[in-house]
Image 1 (cartoon, protein in one colour):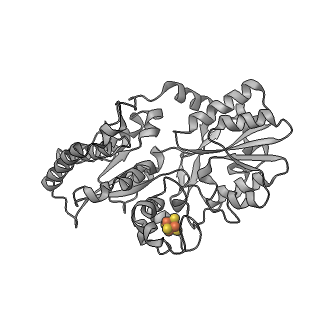
Image 2 (tube, rainbow, N blue to C red; image 1 turned 90 degrees about the vertical axis):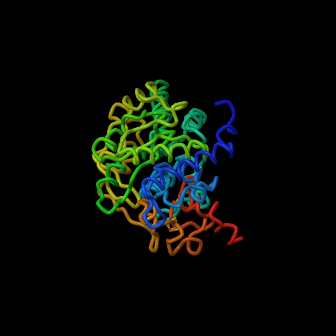
Image 3 (cartoon, rainbow, N blue to C red; image 1 turned 180 degrees about the vertical axis):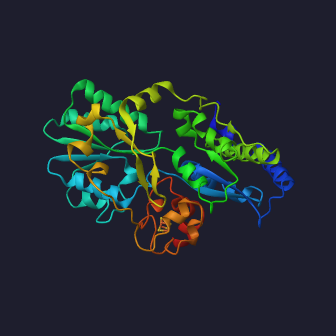
Length: 378
Ligand code: SF4
């Protein structure tokens, strides 16, 4: 790949769209009886809408938007705990910007900041480390959030803090993993999924083998995909071809970035710093076994849960949603964002009710941004 434009070539897109239509017709996919393909990653959801791929592909292909947006699946109780940490005297709470406006039961981090808490947006956990070095009299807490894409950088920051003996730095670990919710979705008899578009960035870290169970146990095709329009069209075609040929395999369309066995340096850092929690609660999906990561005991001095006795280990948790919010149904593909009664009314990017409208990877934000709702509102 030399230029992104090579992956946005309209003529190549037309060829792929024609082939998608031919294969979709061959397997009998129609608007009334479509092939359901779930794009797991919120980045893919936004690319699909940004380039209008949902309207360009054959009408017998329906995209189902999966739970692969870490901010969207963050339960309100976790936001509450972030606010609790930020309200502690002497704490500088650091977070990626996406999490700032996610509603908690009491308030969002943005509202907590407006109320006087010292909450700072950072681009990397290394920024939080630097803040800790420059503020030795303060406690700097980093909100570790995200899938396997961001898990290694948080791990590296903890290892670095341990090397430096930086005692005023800690991580509130909310890292989660992709394969487990997919297993939970596939185990739900109400979910009618025919295939998957696998996440590109996550797979850069973990490789393609963690998805083997999707093909081997559940008999569904999955294609790990890039984020340009031609990547996605080619991946849709690859899924359809597997269905047409009666195959269920893990294929890698994004081989220019995703190594089959992942990134060994990242995987080693993950293994060193984290262990699996017995379960973790997901907004809209409930508790999912072994889907969350906890900082290992040897790094307890840099674990905000241990240091401030807050979070998962501190007692039973509540998984609730704002009244009228349909985020769970959207995230499991049961309804489209526009079918949520709050969409564009009680819930907009300016006044969000659910996290899917806040996050840059949220399905509701994609429908708002690219589906005409924003323009209609303006
Ligand atoms: S419109 Fe708002 S409340 Fe409804 S599903 Fe989307 S984010 Fe949730």
